[in-house]
Image 1 (cartoon, helix red, strand yellow):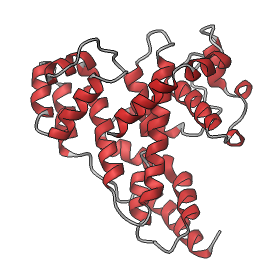
Image 2 (tube, rainbow, N blue to C red):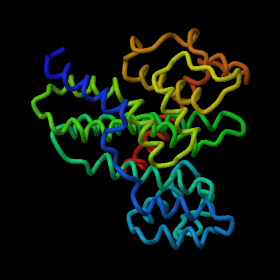
Image 3 (cartoon, one colour):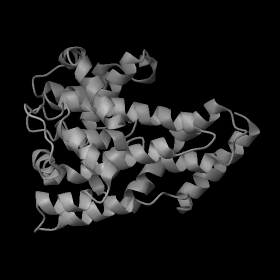
Length: 281
């Protein structure tokens, strides 16, 4: 570790502990949607009126409704129809996918390459989660998919901070992001008011031994997806074998196995690519 990296690492940890890391605000359109969907009187039409204030977000919702996630037989061309298909409860989640894409992709500076890598990992992880969720009874795939994407959200404020140090080596930046991503992500989720469930997801990032209960939950599914992601990237040295990961034991309680999850993913490669393309558009 270089002396500069040591200094930055120490300073960054102090800023995180003191709550002094500069965090990006949730965009206004996302906050407005958040307020609207919480209303007892909200409808597909009232939510559509809010979304239509942002043409890019409107296009995103139509793409999502016509994506492999919902397997529509006929094209969905009207925004209220798209919202009706996605469900009001999932509208904020889908708005967050668009918000995250915009914030990751539009950030400029010395370390944009590192940020894009984090975004690509997040979208592939989310696509794998969406495929896995299809095989789990009564599982909210939209929620799980967004939760998977949020696990890398801490990279945003960290990269913004590290832009001030263009003299760092790229691998040092990657290491600093990985070391501090959970704490930065947790601070951001709390600022955005996204709730305890997403906070738990952030805190469990890379925690292979996570086990809140004996039942399969969202974090378990993301953990299983991350294992498969690393397996595809030939990086299995970064994680324990399935027999040592509680998430796979929870899967077995549903009479499903690690081998079956591998088969699901192998048979859904095109769907995974399609979902990832949709999230990246």
